[in-house]
Image 1 (spheres, rainbow, N blue to C red):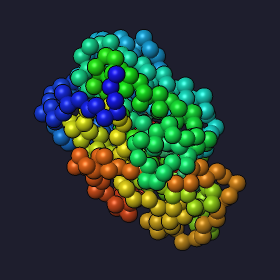
Image 2 (cartoon, helix red, strand yellow; image 1 turned 60 degrees about the horizontal axis):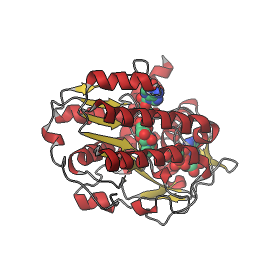
Image 3 (cartoon, helix red, strand yellow; image 1 turned 90 degrees about the vertical axis):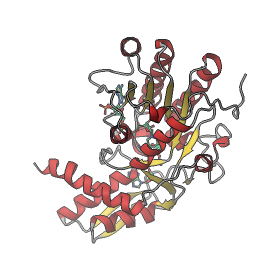
Image 4 (tube, rainbow, N blue to C red; image 1 turned 135 degrees about the horizontal axis):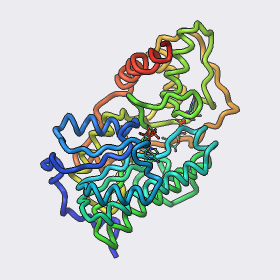
Length: 331
Ligand SMILES: NC(=O)C1=CN([C@@H]2O[C@H](COP(=O)(O)OP(=O)(O)OC[C@H]3O[C@@H](n4cnc5c(N)ncnc54)[C@H](OP(=O)(O)O)[C@@H]3O)[C@@H](O)[C@H]2O)C=CC1
Ligand SMILES: C[C@H]1O[C@H](OP(=O)(O)OP(=O)(O)OC[C@H]2O[C@@H](n3cnc4c(=O)[nH]c(N)nc43)[C@H](O)[C@@H]2O)[C@@H](O)[C@@H](O)C1=O
């Protein structure tokens, strides 16, 4: 039986020199998967294995098994999942637990069975930690207290993913690692008015209010919760870093180390978008967990840190939204 400290180092340092190896990036059209795809292409990886949801439904076990058996990938990054903000998590609990358990279980198990996978990275989320975890939240806070009720279904699925990677490493020697990103944002985010996360939701709401000349914008909750945001290009950089540098049983936090209140975030988005009206708080909407700052010192100790400031990331994401989402909606 291994311990959480018993890191193996068999594959460390070989990923970045293996650029022609076949690599499956599951969910490559999403926020995270598309950023990882861009990063891998920019680094010169030449043999990326990509399937849209329509081409391969990852909830279908036999389809996933056949795909892995036929394609024999050497590396796997699991960025496909059912994802959404606080409202979507509370409204669709069955999807958030069921779809996520199916996708991750099918992929991790097929990765073992096909026999070709040298390394797999599973993406969890900071919501795996207890609602009232110590701040900043260390990796060791996992399973130390009750979860935040608005996303417990999703969190339980993600915790199962971490445990499955650990179990497959311990029993079968599969080099499966887990990264726990903080709240992410950037190009190719989901800008749905209700089901998205706060940052893309506010970009859209402020932009539409600016264009329509509205006097006010409604923001959910009290504005007091604190959140840590990481630009998805930083996340992709961190994922590649872990694929190359880390091989261990314990999951690794991946954050920016900087937090803002939702009120501060709303003021920043308002300024970046150029909306001149006022903010109105809808306190009937849930705040969710009060604070969620991760302790990313384990990753920092390996030599990685985030580079993109929230201000720069917001400017970049708003520009992308205007060019790719708002313009399409006008046509
Ligand atoms: N966004 C965030 O703030 C955070 C995200 N994460 C994690 O990062 C990972 C990626 O999230 P993110 O990029 O934001 O999510 P997105 O919703 O942007 O992307 C998810 C991708 O998975 C695909 N997918 C979903 N279901 C299936 C399926 N059954 N078969 C095949 N493909 C499927 C989606 O395709 P389609 O749209 O066609 O269904 C989409 O391309 C997740 O594990 C998430 O938990 C962690 C922390 C924060
Ligand atoms: C990444 C993470 O994301 C989720 O957890 P969350 O951090 O609570 O995410 P959120 O972005 O939806 O909200 C953050 C805060 O912002 C407030 N808020 C204001 N106005 C809007 C608004 O318009 N939309 C949304 N969504 N939130 C708003 C909202 O009330 C809350 O206080 C989970 O899916 C979880 O599973 C997970 O992994």
